[in-house]
Image 1: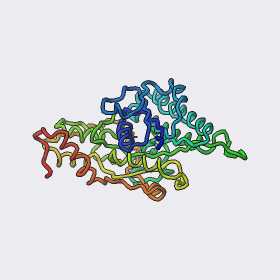
Image 2: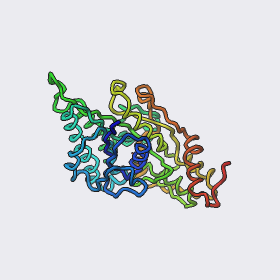
Image 3: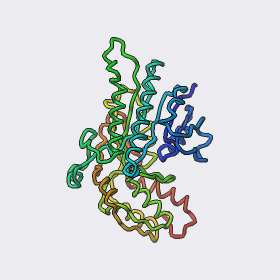
Image 4: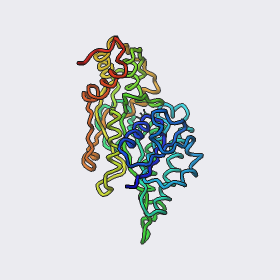
Length: 345
Ligand code: AKB
């Protein structure tokens, strides 16, 4: 059996690391990775080749390959992107644009669509006020598309670029014999939580940061108010969603961009979960106006009915299962020596 050639950009990030591990475990893929950073020790041997460097300046290198699937995960996340906005635009938009052009060219040349997976985000949404957010509840993909952040604007625009290159590039879909176009697929992720890695530069980071700090017996000052609510998901569900969406036959899809959802909880509910799990948990709330403003513009909850109907999406981990079957067992294993860890047996 010939293996599928895949490119994973941002391979050293949280989703990247989990995806490399999952694809390698599944088998049947020749994985090429790229990132600004060297590949962590744990991933060496899983990637056939790692190209270290800035994608935007090194795009020519990638024309030598024939990728079947591109997972374009590299991005500057929401909080970081507000500190260096123009640099974030370069990474988030120009990087995506360069890869879309490559995938469009290869799809046409090989007469075979290159699959292009793009992780979008709840940051693509934006509510003018907290009252609007609270009144809206679960949002559908086409509602409230008014991001407040550079990162959110970049995500929304890149979704549109993907739709353009996949369907209308050069208006050649109107030719009598239209060329083969790339196959763009995207998911709007909620905040993601891994039991094995920590995020950096994002704004949903308070969730995972709080839990990991509590598990290590470290005090944590949460940078948003206790009543702040957005939706979250376990990393294994995020990876499951990516792999399912990429594998599903195109005819089953009615759109390019899908919400997915698992559970929605407040920062205070996170604190209570951490207190129940870890003795001596010390969590305070010290909101930062800028980061608070960002999460206040993001939805409390997502309507993922389209993903459920079109490609059978369903999370494995609701809130209880996330804590009881994923996060806490991993923490027990990792910090087994810590005396303040409650026993759950
Ligand atoms: C961020 O906080 O920037 C990301 C996201 C929600 O896309 N985790």
